[in-house]
Image (cartoon, rainbow, N blue to C red; front, top):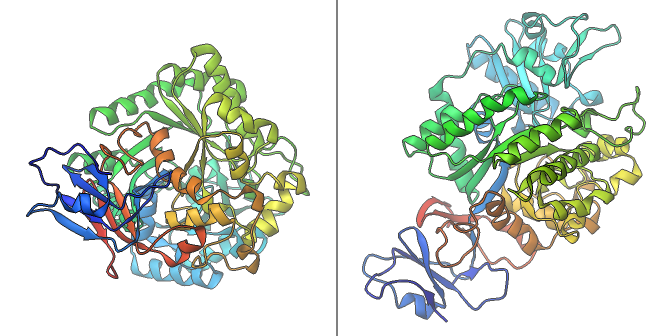
Length: 555
């Protein structure tokens, strides 16, 4: 049962034997051969072992699962790397922990600004931080900390003063300055309001950005991620424009992962942004960075009531339904123009109204341009059931962030009550989307949440938090949230491998273990046959183009 395109006189560079090869259909194959970076043969142990030559590297998997390399379809790698190399609050999910990390960082860094990220709203009374705490920790310099989801910025008084934000400062388009009862800014800036401060932060040094990018790459390799799609190529809040760092590291070969990305459409911008966006696409392509996608943010997030809903939030005063970042009519014009130029649109759509507006824009583009490239909507926290069939009808991919689909404290105590019981039924409707025939891809949105695909797949299949996730502090997170929306293990793995490759347009080379595919592989520490296996597994080895780029110290 050997499948091969090897020349008879050519020995493979690598063979993997005795593996539990992951395949959509049952297979008796247990071994593969790799030649010149691509899978050249798939078969049983005996047939593949017969191909071994003197220089062939041999890996005995001892029955462990061998999967295609994971593809993170929505990630912010430079931001994640800056978190790993800077003041990352994600490592301490408590007010005491945040105080300790900020104080230590401020004391050890003499820069003009103190900048960090990673805080969670559920740590603070009322869900939002206040400038008073930062004033105490950093009294002498402006301090700016982006939330873990990158939709809020926490600043101290000095930062507000430098930005000239006071009781008379109007809220910017698609943003809000949170104020106290007297009208003074509290230090919490939502969405685009954060840019009033972040635009003043001195730029990162190129050497620091390079170190962050390569640190992030090593971290992702350790999790079995061999390819990713960067969801913002451009400047956003405290996130620097990552395009120069990508071009540098791709150009000198230090960035080895397979990378695609979406050029950022400035929040709320009209068609006047088209030429600049097209220019960035052309610049990336000319430098060997295969960019064919544009990121459009159509709303915010439900947790701060900026997610765009069809009906008002429940129990929220003053009454609000959230914000559409781009008016629907203008969104249709923008999407139609991008679609006509063969560019995919990667929407941020959280609320059910935003999801509908994105689908409507794609439908209009189809009517105007005919069948074209595939588009995708990321996040989909809540969707109206009437819109679910439209994903398949329009060929729109649901880009899911699976680790969010569990009953964390902030979701139970803040988000679901604001959605109300009826909408909560359609909270992260993974299973319903799949049953409606929707094409699925998965990503982590790191640094919003962990980029570990094994964690994400576990939650997609169980609708519970991974046992090792320290952010899931409440007992309810271990109970299934809307269990009818679970995915099968096969569907979740497909979405984190082939699904991402398909929407990136590279499925002819990646996402499967088959002859002719790039030898991008992840070997786990044991067999995988059911979701309950995942908590005990780790990545033993990550292989990129036939070369090991990560090997666990325990393997």
